[in-house]
Image (cartoon, rainbow, N blue to C red):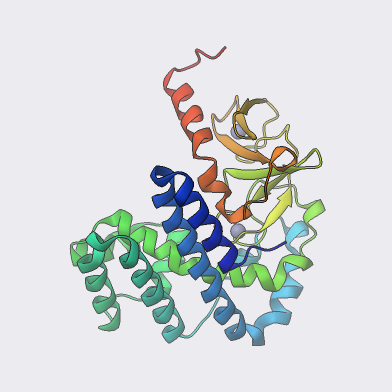
Length: 283
Ligand SMILES: [Zn+2]
Ligand SMILES: [Zn+2]
């Protein structure tokens, strides 16, 4: 079942009332995701002329072992659509983080004046190429982390739309890679349902089965696991040192939108990074 913007906002409000400390960051995260889902519906309409091409390419993903985004050579949208997404994302951040208002106004103003291209900013960021974002940040005197976060949020509705169009055409059962078959991102988040493990992309929301004995980052089978209170599992790779988090849905009392899993599993990140610092003193 797909998460809806209203279910995300409802659950965030409920969690905010139960735990104000975790709740504030959760409310921001959930509201941003809800906004991203709403924007993705508009983007999906824009991409309609390309739908059959994306769906055809999605069928090639498993054979080519490359993501759909990679096979398609990116996603082309008119500049005004990118600008609209950027503005929506930026006002959502401002609602929750007033202290960032003037920085975000500077960013939007510069985009409108053509000092940088929002589409390029978003596209370079997902490739992990921070030079474009760094150029924007330095040129405008802004924090690189902020520019980079806004860039990824701006790209997210586009990738969610791509996932909506093509997810059913990907042969997920045959997809053996650790990265997302739609957008190519690596993820630290997964879930376990009826005894089987899945990974869930933190960017586009794609889900695919993944064997629990295999590291999604390097493919090694030197993997250990540990139960964490709250119905979570922590997996670690003995070779590359990466970890990933799995929500055991079979033990959850109520359904939580899966898009919130990266945040509700923060306690797992804490355990994972603490033990890292203890360098091998496990047990
Ligand atoms: Zn993805
Ligand atoms: Zn590994």
